[in-house]
Image 1 (cartoon, rainbow over the protein chains, first blue to last red):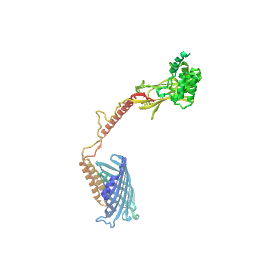
Image 2 (image 1 turned 45 degrees about the vertical axis):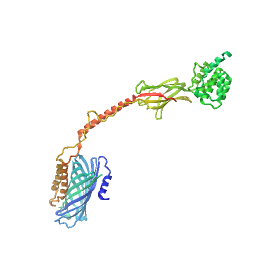
Image 3 (image 1 turned 135 degrees about the horizontal axis):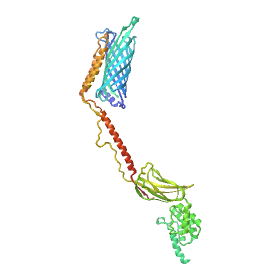
Image 4 (image 1 turned 180 degrees about the horizontal axis):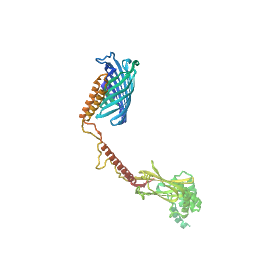
Length: 214
Length: 342
C-alpha cells in the first residue's frame, strides 16, 4: 500500500470526536538555534518531533516532543555537535473567548550530557488565540519559566519563553501547523566559589508539520 | 270428564312449549314421554322422563325431560318435586322463560320458586346505542336479572383491555349505564368485547355474558404546527463582511513575537537567528493575507438565535395546546355499541 493510500485510509477510518471535543496529532520538522554562555558558543540544527493538542470544552492540553541535532554554527567556538531532546507540555484553561491561562513543564536534555546544559522548568503563563479565517487560528504565548534546574548548576531568576503558533485546516481533517518558540534563561553560576558569572541560555525553535484531527 | 279431555289436552299442549325446529327431540324415550304428557298419562310421563334422563341426552333434551317432570309434578300437585325439576331446568338453561299466559299457575309458581332458589344471572341484554363519548348523557344500557341477592361484578373484556363496568350487591332486575370510557377519560378502544356479569353468593357463583362490538366514528384531530403564519426562522449564522482583520491579526501576533524576541535577546549572546521566526511568522502572515481575500467564516447571529428560540417556544406552546385539544376531541368521539349474536 502506498503512503498516500495509507494516509487516505487513516483519514477515512479516524473516528469523529464527540461534540465539544477536538484532538489533533501529527509529526513536525524542526529547525533550532541554540546559544549558551557567550555569543561564540552557538549551534544550529534540524530534527523531527511530534505534537498533540486536545480540547474539551474550555480545557485544552498540548504536548510537543522534538529531537534536534545541533551542530556548531559558522564562526562558532564550539567544536562538537550534540543532540537535544526537548519535551514541552501545557494545560490551558480558557478565561475568555480569545485568551487562556496555562501551566506546564519544559525539559531539555543534551546528548552527550556535558556538551550543553540540560534544563527543566515549570511554565506559567498565558496565551491569546484568534480565528483569522475558516479553519485558521493564530496563537501568541508568553510563559515565565519558574524554578529552572540546570545540569551544570546555577540559577536563573528571569527565564521567559515566547511562542507564535499557526494552525490551518488544509483539507478535511488534515491540518498544517507551524510553531515558533524563543526562550531566554538568565542563568548565573558560581564556578569554584569565585563569584557568580553570567551563563545565559537562548534558544529559538521552529516546528512545521502536519496534524490529523481525530 | 271425557268431554273435557280434548280441552285439557289442548291446554297441556299450550302449557309445554315444544322444542324449536332446530331442537327436535331425538331420544325415543323422551319422545314417548312427551307423547304420554300430551295424552295426560302422568305416571307414564314420570316413568319415561326418568328413564330418558338415565340415557344419553343433549343439553336441551335433558332440560326438556326435567321440564316434563316439572309440569307433570305440578299437574299432580307435587309442588316440591316440581320445584326441584324446574331447578334442574334453569341450571341447564338459565335463560328458560315460561309464559304466564300459557302455563298453569301451579307450574308457573313452581318455576318461579325454583328460580328464587338458584343463583342465576339471566336475561343479560345490551341495547344497540350510539352516543358522543366524553359527554355526560351518553352511555350503554345494560340490564340483567340476578335471581338471588348476590355480589355482582360486570366487566367488559377484550383481548387487551378489561374494564370494570360496575359492581354491587344486587337482586332482581339490574339496570346499568356504561359510559364506555377508560379511567383516563378516553373512550374504550374500538373492537369486540364480551360483557361478563359474575354473581357470587357464598360458594355459589353464576355468570352470563354477551359479546358486543364497539366502533368509533372519525375524529378530526388538529395537526401539529411546524411554523407560525407570518413568522419564519432566521439563519442562525451570518457571514461577516470581508475585512483586514485576518492579516491585521496575523501581523499583530507575528509582530508581538518579533518584538518579544528582540527584547529578550541577550546582548552577551548576540542577535539570535531569525530563521525560525521568519518561517512561522511568514506562514502566519501569508495565511492572514489569504484569509483576508477569502470569504469569511460564518459566525453565530445571536439576535437570530434568540428570535428562533422564541419562535420555537411559541410553536411548542401552540403544539401543547393542540395536543390538549386533540385529547378532548378523541374523548368526544362518536361511540357505537352493538351486541354481537353469540
